[in-house]
Length: 412
Image 1 (tube, one colour):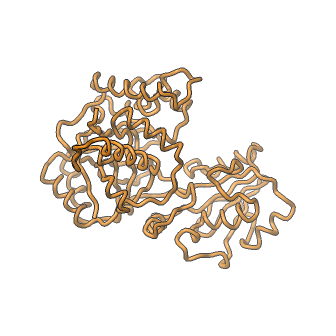
Image 2 (cartoon, one colour):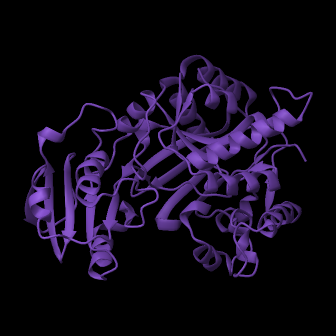
Image 3 (tube, helix red, strand yellow):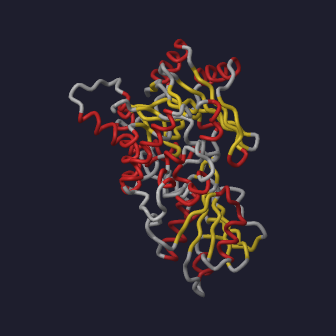
């Protein structure tokens, strides 16, 4: 079973919550962050992507960037734009998009649970991305953005959360990017906090990383380093835990994560494609069921349906993204490692089919593939099997905003 850990959250003064909360650092490039933060001194991007306050020709990995993040965090606290709770609490975070709501428990989760496999992953990480967040966490002495976790719904946990929302007013309630409504409640009754901690410890066997593998690895490595450096450390020290928001998997939705290729289309392309797929012209590229794909080429959409001969019962090889990778990208175009091959790029489904058409019509890319979304059951099954999904298999919406919660590691 798993451990959850209440914490003294650093969070926005309610007066500034809407101005502070912003999109996560890893969905924005530096210029997009500059544009968002330029006329908003309250934006959390001044902490999370602090290069926006430094000369544009400075590397985003320069020491000065992390020093600036630290000084900006201190300034936000001094000005009371951010405040810190005096007692360890839990929090509820509800996001509503297009009429669909999901509510997560904001807490800290255990580094030990992660290293022992009770917090399960489904993606590999890239060391260079870890290094950036490690340096950011160490500089700020805080988990500066949460990990997005999920679990199989527990009735008692759900009842406790639902009852709290019904009987208490939210601390924050605002609508922000992509018309998503964000509401946060403070769970500040010791008996309710203890009951939630106990239920997780007794009835929740595992948590799963939905999004934030790099942040998880970075937080874990920082915590382990701090523990090693302290002779008299305790298991209750804050650096043994990392900031998380935990949602029941039944409330989450994965959007499609589509692909574009910059490759030559040979004369025998369709013949090779039809070995493993039926191919017909269509007017819409969006797949409506698993094992079907849309392909946009030369101004025309095609519907591809995988033949049963390439189906697999393996939790990874049977994924739609794996069928496309193994039997199109690798077999036909010799794209073996999509993490490093510059001939492929990925387009989140929230951008729609028009984005794929524009990318191909511009001549920048030669062909686009639309993929049916991976399911939450797919994700959990892969993680339970101890396996790894292909890169860019899942795109979650709505995104958790950064700046609503910071976890102080309490070592400075």
